Length: 122
Image 1 (tube, rainbow, N blue to C red):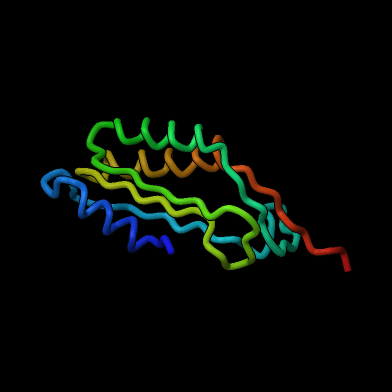
Image 2 (image 1 turned 120 degrees about the horizontal axis):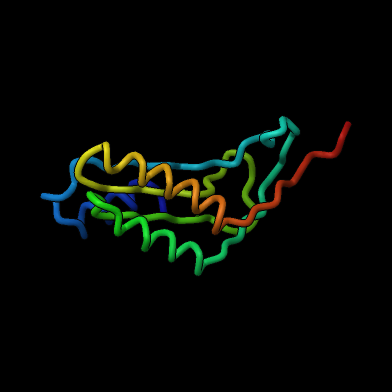
């Protein structure tokens, strides 16, 4: 099973340590409510894998970035389950944090397709 520890280990194994001053990680999980505050029971998740690969490749080219790794759990995910893992490594925080935020936001907006399973109104 893929987890953040596996992503970080991959980065440490495959990246020149002289170019890594920090690794920032994201672990998105299924919330029990939608952004609108409605009760949610699950998410159905799929992806546009071409967009996913293009975004990651682009983010890897940013100044000061030495690695970008991400994993998406697809299919039906229950409340509390992991959804998306992202790790970005680079030289200094001024380079890493903006790329990290852009990577997460672009993956979610441009590559991830999700459908919330709402609880019936009671």
